[in-house]
Amino acid sequence: MVRRTFLKKAALAAVGAAVTSPLSALAKQPKGSARKKVLLINGSPRPDGNTFCALQEIATQLQKHGIETEIFQIGNKPVRMCISCGGCRRGKGCVFNDDPCNEIAAKLAEADALVVGSPVYYGQPNGGVLAVMQRLFYSNGQLVQNKPAAAVAVCRRGGATASLQTLNMMFEMMNMPVVTSQYWNIAYGAAKGEVKRDAEGMQTMRTLADNMAWLLDKIHAEGGKPAPDRNEPHTFTNFIR
Image (tube, rainbow, N blue to C red):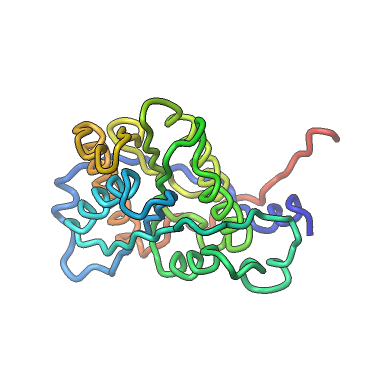
């Protein structure tokens, strides 16, 4: 099955989400509310480098709001690219089981939101995290539809905004409300752990977490359905006809 056919079956109409971070609203979260969990993916081959530090800052802040978190490391082993074989349409998940794609899918099935962090390589996200996310979204798109998402880019100097745009484009195609912060979700650092000295960057991560907690609170208050089935059928236009 070609990608266009798959997208016709999988896509829903775009969903808008206004995201702010009134902490007073978070403070009013009812006790005993449904469990919420955010999966954070570390797209760096370094398990405890600057990308991890940025994600850890988000996770710690989310936990303050009573939200469960898990940081998943894609690691430093080879990650396969999508080969457009269509095998995921005939079975369950991606046909390749020798890298983290299907493992992440299983975890995402239990998560309410997603954060993807990556170091910046040549003005782009790490190739490994791009490969695994492309396969994840193509083979298990139903697991990400309508769940809040955020991208985080960590760099020494430049290229972070291009990396954020690249990651966000996947979220936008899957009706995932993109959670923002007080600034672009960027933190700066070169040497291991140096990102912690970026005071504004760390504050940006905490504000991102506050905004995500607020949005999840609103979603759960409405029954846990971020995008009711109220959309018209998706119309696809091919530019060559």
